Length: 541
Image 1: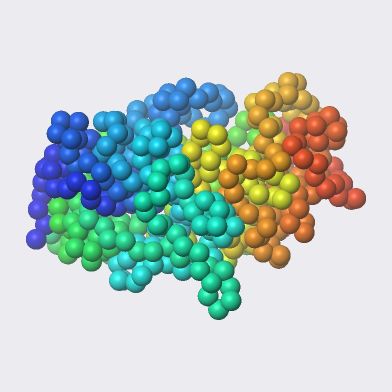
Image 2: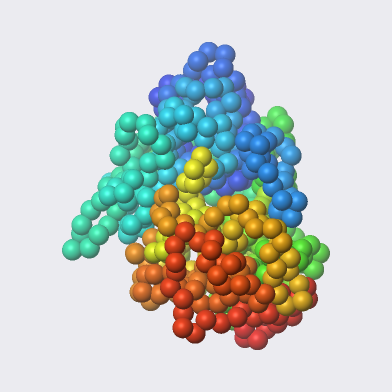
């Protein structure tokens, strides 16, 4: 029988050295009030301590990170949120000791724990997001783990770094290399979970959980089932309590039989739908908003990159858009009037509509369907996507891309590794140099002041995408505002250059290696370098 308790009482239920599983993306699914109570109890008593945190997706507040580390953001970047240190980073606010081990696909927005990781105070591993999410189903079903090719040749591969993000002694084996039927595989072993810390929108008196106001139907059911079948307890924070048997059975995403404790949040602001939105009904399917009301992108080099990426779309494609610049491709397609010709998706489970960029990444305006991340990653890993567009961190001569660990910036791969493993066309999008001042217009690009951050390097610091392991029939493009590259015979090859750009001065001089140059080197379509375009139709049709 479910018990209705306070956040403070929930915190007192968590023992030292427990394995704690969470579910969600951004702030969707995050039990903020309970997390704060856990932090406060640790500050007051030193307990619970030594927790092993199992996190699947990015769960935190990017706006806080900008203040925590003093990062600078361009005023043209996505609007920052100003709501403070929310999300998993709460667990680090009390200082070291609360979290001892940490496994996640994405650690970039949990800034206090990230800082402890860099000081080797937490044994931290990152694994692919789809693997992390679907491993809970293996645990729930009593199976030994997940066998897959996802992660081969990347930093997750035990023959490289085994997913390690720092230099702590290796106390937990999160992935193993295996040969099966003469082929290479990675095996991610199951584990026992002591506590599931989840969030829904509404609970009834029997503990049935509805996600009515959530934008993401997260993997909470799998985490709850795995925890219960491990002999652990399930705690769910909600906004509202309903009379028993008053909720529509089809709206129940976690049955009450799996729930031990329900916390009805005292502060409704602890149940945000996304980092930048308390509740947008167009994200959770209650209404449809006119997409003409969505503000178009400003005309700059980022919009040029998004336009060039959009030129790879074909009518009927199912595409995935990653965080950052790639998410803005949706805005370009909407502005050009072709949202109905392709189906956009995100790894969080949004299908159709228009995916949102930060600070609401993972949500979508007017989605046609919202499925669970488990289901979406089954579709992705089986090769169901026609195209994906993801970001550029560091690129080397072999086409390797590092977005997971660059210097002191520890991020993790998110769904990057899963998505690039089987998608037919993979596009990496970004600027050629970081912090450059550029002028776009009149059909050309001009460099006003050269950038200070080199993104095309001789050897990447960590392999998040492996050019060597890319399937031979996979099309891989690297699209920047100055040039377009393609992975040909597993080598980076320059195929297009922007009008107004000098090949030697503006491209090759700022690369840490000499790429192969196609004998058929072309100019990028100069029409995308005009403020008004209107030319996507001739490509997408």
